[in-house]
Amino acid sequence: MAVDWLLEQWFPNILTGPKVRIACDGLSAIELAFKDRPLSPTDAQFDLVSSIREAILRSSVDWAPQHAYGHLDKSNLFDKRSWWEKRNLEVDGMAIEYPDTKQSRLDPQFIQECVTLPALRFRWRDKGTISAEAESEIAWDTMGRAMQSLPAGLQRWSTKHCVGMCGTGKFKVLWGLETSAACPCCGDFEDHLHVPRCRAASATAEWDRRTAAFSAWLDLQLTGPSIKIAILQLLQGVRTPPSFPPRPISSSVRPAFLAQQVIGSQGLLEGRIASSWLPLQQQYYDKIRCRQSVSLWASRLSQQLISIGFYMWEQWNPVQHSDDNVQLRERHSAVNEGIHSQFDMGPDDLPKEIQPMLTCPCRVLRKLLVDKEEWLKLLCQERRYFRRSMKAQRRSLRTIFSPGP
Image (cartoon, rainbow, N blue to C red; front, side):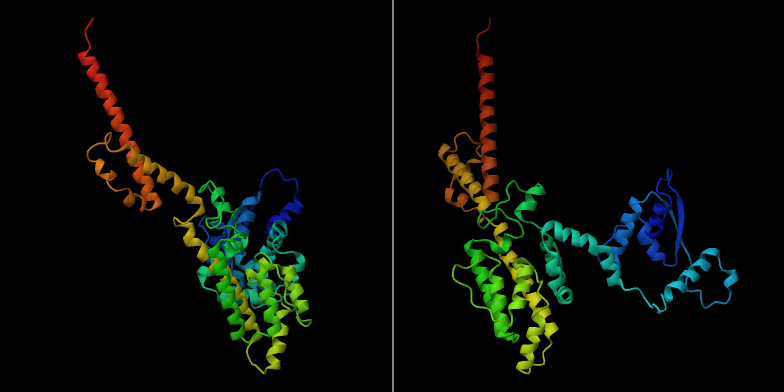
């Protein structure tokens, strides 16, 4: 990327793509950057390699990668090394001491931030997810520790839901899987923000159950009483604010309360807690002479908040795939009406092998929606075929028995 940038500065109006040979003593790094093998998020340095590949695709340079043997600095046969191996030793020597400090290894977290953070910040601001003020208030170390402690499945779920690209009505319509973005529980427009805010009775009951369990967890972790009141009040702001006046917030926790409000209720539900909570909880631990780790408390707090959002999704998911679905009620009504009309017409214009299907309407109506639709489709199709056959037979008979000219 650096070489490409230098070429753009030196030759801004170059007409033909220059050919540049680039060497590296890491064979796997060369192959990852220049081969066509698909990348996996589990690959080492995934973000960095992805950015390098994107830069290569955008570049007008014809790159010629080459592997140079490294770790030859202990050999005394410098003059017998190839030109590329000599240059590799020189570059390694400059990189190890920069500027006057020995660099044993590159910091992958720092590199990842340099590569990904500008684009990530742009998306945060563009989508209104995290403002500049909120970014400075968030306990990012706590968030990172919490994410690493979550099960792999919950990590993937949290990543998808933080950006909103998940199987809700909004994206199912965009993907062409559904024609309506209505919530299966309440019928309102559904995106990832709607799921924890759904006003259906089942969602409300699940929310009450999870917040009660979260309150008990705060007590179990010896959370400061004023901190507990403030966090629970902020959490209730995820859904419609209550009609009664909020409980008063202690002046000692008000700065942290205001900082968390800057982050937002959705940010709280996604595990982004304000760094101001940690010293307050540490003060409470000191007061009660508790030796628990406040950083561990904060990490577990973040995990608990993420889990609340996950359980709200879990209670929604079975409804999405069941017949008790607002989107399916119209289909239920239409197919039930069609079944009744089939029984009203009787079995007379059906083939004999199909007629037993019209013996018990209650049994048919108790079937699943998909099965009822298949049943109705089959009956309508057989009636249509039978009627066409009868018409064809009548035409044939008229032709046979009609008087000649």
